[in-house]
Image 1 (cartoon, helix red, strand yellow):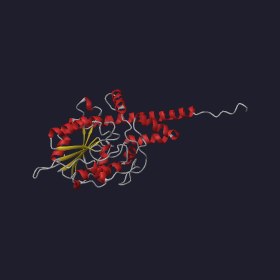
Image 2 (cartoon, helix red, strand yellow; image 1 turned 180 degrees about the vertical axis):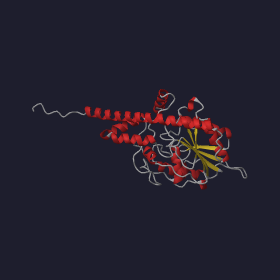
Image 3 (cartoon, rainbow, N blue to C red; image 1 turned 60 degrees about the vertical axis):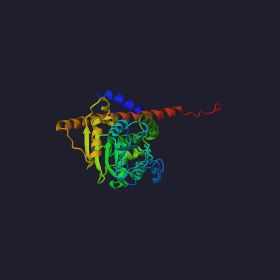
Image 4 (cartoon, helix red, strand yellow; image 1 turned 90 degrees about the vertical axis):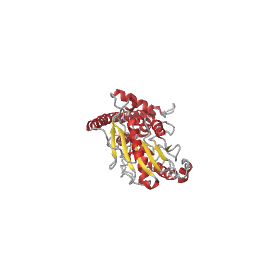
Length: 347
């Protein structure tokens, strides 16, 4: 809540432009390769664990169509009880015919600050186990959840496992610009590195977690064959830039916000009726719906997104500078508080 409050306050100060927080922190290592993610915080869980948390296989009458499974995957440091997908779940309930599960709550185990590979393996094995008894599986993700899904497909998840569609909302498929800048700040802080990390963790996210290190190193991968793909992002999303969202070979759309709740673009997409409509159309038809917006509207969305990206870069530099100053100040305070070994009075 502190991060959202800070984002909202800065958003107003920047005249309707949200602040770019440190959602992903990087190192300067080479891009991730399959099986080469950052060190997990805990050992990868097994297929048995995924099976234990898989939704029950529905009982289907002979000749009746099987139901469809929708798997929701949240982002960095998300909580499975945070209600992030509640509005979208309500839309799915209105249409009927869907069994909706949240990865990490109803399905599998999800460490939202842990290794991308460990989480991707959990998602892969959980979907494979849960897909039995369903006509098809549809994956819908937000933010880092999209990167977890990308890795799951790289690690073997495919259309043969029953996955028909995969729609990503505000996903940094090609890593995060903020991540690299923040890691540079940690490097420059030198002996104040621990203090800078503590300061950053207190107000944003822990730059030392496996998730943020992996987010900085990951690079966009080819879309999975046979799975219908769509990427959606709001033009006012300052946390995931156009460069971060780069996903070659995938239909990617930038949407203009249509309500006050969508102005903070990164979280706002979780309330976007446009995103819901396009996602549901993709799931129902198993094809990407045509973009019916005119050239002017599409150009406007791209122009707004570019403006937000430019402003967000300035805010990011300021935030990194703030974290550096906070870290150095923390080091000085700790140093001054250390007791001084004075010589005995006899000397």
